[in-house]
Amino acid sequence: MTRYRPSDLERLGPDAKRQIELVRFAENERTRQQDLATRSKYGNKRVCIDGKWFDSQVEAKRWQELRMLQRSGSITNLIRQPSFDITVMGVYCGCYKADFSYMDMDGNITIEDVKSPATAKNAVYRLKKRIVEALHSITITEVVFK
Image (tube, rainbow, N blue to C red; front, side, top):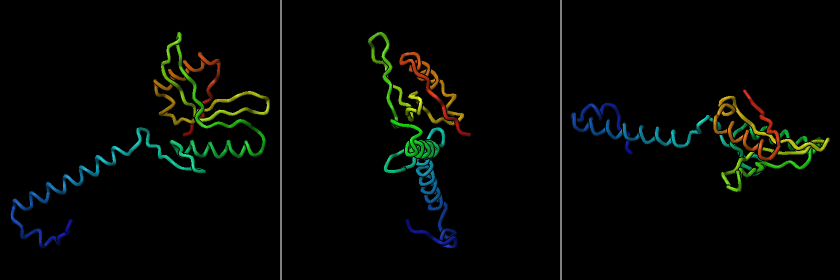
């Protein structure tokens, strides 16, 4: 789009000025809609570490910490996004994906979910977490950041 100097715009008639304002409004609205479409519900930003995409910067940071613990031998069997089926009375109802699972030196398996204070209060998450813990006899540890 050609940009005009203010002196050029002053010479235009009211109809031309109105058309220019409508075009500017449409451009601003389109940009605003694109921003809303790409913005995450909780404001997290996806990030790529070691060729793997993470839903948030905090989750990626936690992955790096766990990888360091695995390299030092403190934990083993580190898995990203382990999935747990939710099946009730033989009916598949969905699945729950945690962020990480690993085994510590004592042989205990830990399942972790990285959460912000806002996402930790999400009702659907809380319900799915309780159901998975009951069905699979596991405990899901929340790593909450502020």
